Length: 409
Image (tube, rainbow, N blue to C red; front, top):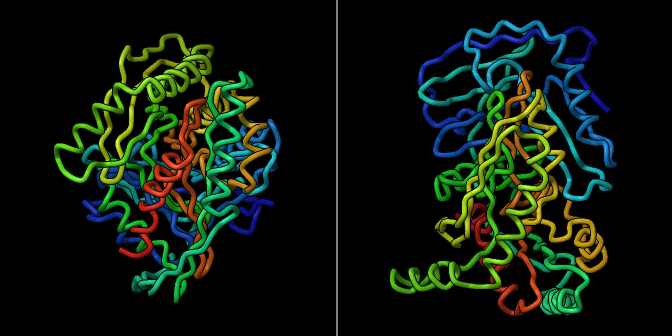
C-alpha cells in the first residue's frame, strides 16, 4: 500500500540552504520521526509525503527501487543545494528475512540535514508542517523475557555450535530479544537524543518504529564511490584502562574472532566484486572501541562499474556473514530453525536513499521496535564451533545495554 500526498500528481519538492540548525534531533516533532545521524551530521525527517509497505520476497529491493523511481522520478524538484541527501529523500527499513513482512519506505514531508558544513531543508507540498511538542520521559521501565529465556537461548547456542563442529556450516549469527514496558508512551525523540549523545560514532536511526544506534555501515554510495564498514568479532569493555587494553589485545589475537571476521570480509568481497571496477579491502582489521564493546573492524572501499543505486548494492550485500553466517544460505535456514523468533527489522538494512541513487544504509543492530509503552530490544552475536554459550549470552546482554540506556538514561 502506498500513499503520495493523497493524489496522483507529481510531488512538489523544494530544497533550500539554511543556517546552522544546531542539534538536528531537537527539531523533530513527536509524530513518526525519521533520523540518520552520526557525529551531529545527517538527516532528520517528519511527516509523510509517500509511504509503501514493500512486499516480501527475493525481489523486494528491486521492487522498492522501482516504486521509488515512480514516486520521485516525476517529482517537480527545486533543489538549490544539489548534494547527496538534498532533494526528495526516502528513509527505509527492510526485514532481516526476505520472506517476512514489515519492510517499508517513507518519503517524509520535511527533511532537515547537515553535512560537511552545509545545512538544508527539503519540503514537499504546501500544507503546514507539524509543530514541535515537549519530549517526555517514559518513566520506570520493566523488563521481561522475549521469545526465549536466557537458559533456552544458551541451549540454542550450544546446538548451533555442535552443528558447526559437525561441518554443516562455518558460522551462524544468533539473536535474542527482550521486552521492555514503560509507565508512559515511549517518545522516540528521547531515545534518539540519548543514543546520539552516548554513541556519537554510531549511526543513530529511526524508521517506522525501529530505533537504534548501529556501528555497522553496510554501504554508502556517493556517485560511483562506495564505502562499507565490516564489524565481526566482539568483546566487552574492561573494568579499567589496563583491563580494556588486555581485552582488546585478546580480541585481536583470538583465532575464533579473527576467523569470524575473515568470513565477514570474504562475504563482502564476494558480493561487491561483481558490481565494482575496483575494490579495496584491508589486510588486517583494526579495533573499534565503543562505550560498551570493542569490535574488529575493516573499512572497504570501491568504485561501481555501472549506474547501480545504493539499493542495488544493498540487495547484493544483504545478508552479510556478519549478521547471517557462512555459508549464507545454510546459516539462514539454521537461524529460521533454531532462533525461535521473528527478527523483524533487526539486523536488516536501514537508512536512506535520494532521487539520484545516493544514500547510506546500515545494519540495524543495537536496536528496538517501539510501539506505545512497549519496546522489543534485540541483540546477538556470531556463533562458531568453539563458542561458549555463557560467553555468548554475556555478549548479547552487553549489547542490550545500548537500548536499555536509551530507555532509562
